[in-house]
Every structure is written in C-alpha cells, then in structure tokens.
Image (cartoon, rainbow, N blue to C red):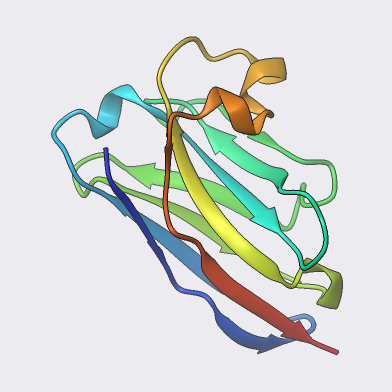
Length: 126
C-alpha cells in the first residue's frame, strides 16, 4: 500500500482543516488507518485511527470532540477533519495503514503500522 497525504497548510488558531490520505492498491479496505503527528523536536504521536469498515474509531484525548477521522473505501481515501485548531498542534501529520486486529492499545503505537505516507505540514498561527 502506498499512501499520499495532502491538505496541510497555514491556518489561524480556531480554524478548521481537512487532511486527506489517498491509498493505492486494491486492498485498502482491509487495512485499519491511522493519523499521527510530529511536532518539531518531539516524538511522533497518535492522533486518530479507524478500522477497516469505518465502524470503529479511536482518538487521542487531546483531539476528542474536535477531530473526526473517516474513510471512503470506494475512493481509497481516509480523512481527518480538524476543527478548533490550536497553535500547539502545528506538526507534520502522517497517515498510516496497518493490517491485523483492531485492538486499541496496539493501534496507538507507531510500530504497529506497516505503511506510512510522506506527511503533510499543518501550521497553526496564534
């Protein structure tokens, strides 16, 4: 699976942004998908994940109620709708795909994802 993230940009605090991640390959619908982010000088952190069907989602506490992950298997695309963005959420956002069971403790970890996109930069100004 090859992943291409897009949709990043410069926004002001409180604004919204929608990221997209387009996947190649016919087996997209068999993968759980996740979004991670990495701020300068910090480790990559989990943001959100969605199971293969779109029926189950999981969010980091810091984004619950503001971010929404969704997917369109017909378009081989996963989305991250981000509302009420904060300056501290400035980071490179990565999408990732994993096969295997849907198990929240596992889906939070970088190492459980086999495929990664190149990242898209989100800058939130104050």
